[in-house]
Length: 454
Image 1 (tube, helix red, strand yellow):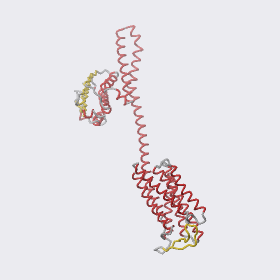
Image 2 (image 1 turned 180 degrees about the vertical axis):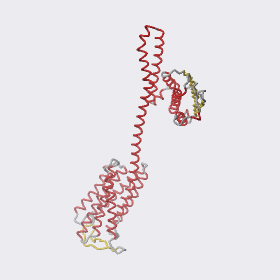
Image 3 (image 1 turned 45 degrees about the vertical axis):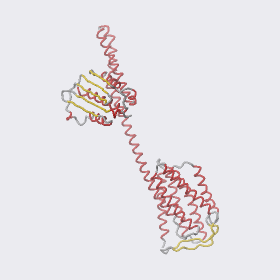
């Protein structure tokens, strides 16, 4: 029966497949060095297992020595690459320490290649066979151990300590799941390698198990890296989608600002230019009418200036922190008066310092309410009062417009819903009352508890 070569061939095939897969992944932009080191270690595990098959099937001492030297050399290179993978995976920084530890394996590798019988044996006299329970036999050497083999044990011990130290530091940084996964796979790998060292030291006679440790390391870490890769890809897609939405939002905001500039400031400035051009001729014929034109020109200019300041606040919301709420509302109203003929009576009492979030909500709701009045209310007078005391801050906005039925708001009109959401976001109370022909009143009140939040 030839069960072991078949099983080892399956192990080798898995390692080859996973190694090529991660080398392919390393050609991308997501952690290329990590996947390259892991893919290379998988390919070295593949070479190790193939050499082990040749060692088991060796017919003579010379063939056994060649196969054993290939097994040992591929194991050393595997160890070097795997420890670099561990360093990259755990973000271990002292590169000089890693190079010193790897140098022990390089020296072991050179000794193994230079020695006629490898680093393990100084002399091999003959080959014997071990019979396994299912009737299969494997080759086992009879010879003298090489004292230099202790150097290999030193290299293995020091690098194992390094690997578990790296896992511990990764765990301390908060990457607990990743550290525990790596620690589990390394524990299995180190345990099987130590088992094989006992076989080499002739303490026990059994089948080598390092290939099982290699396979477990390949499978466990491949699953972990695949999971991390999937999460990284999803995160990258989310970032791309967020960037796309941000660009759309920026474009929409630019269009809105351009539209606002055209609807308000540009038209106002056009009217100002027209009046200014006509004033010299009117002044010659009728100074009184020209005087009225100058007053209108002043009003339009102040309105355009106020509207521009409002647009600057739209572009730089941090500007809200520079002024009290009462001044911001007055600035907003000046911009409105520069666009239409509307009587706005403003009363501010007890204006007090507010958190930026609360101030922004009060400002936006006032802005939305005034826009609705201009577009829909057909009002001639608007009353705005801001009153604050030790208990609460209350904003009232009322008009003498046409009003509406609150139960019959068209579904496409989201202004009122947005105002309610803004009020709820700071824990404020929003109330709207309106009746056809009797105008509309909005009351926004915020308690002291919310106002004191910074």
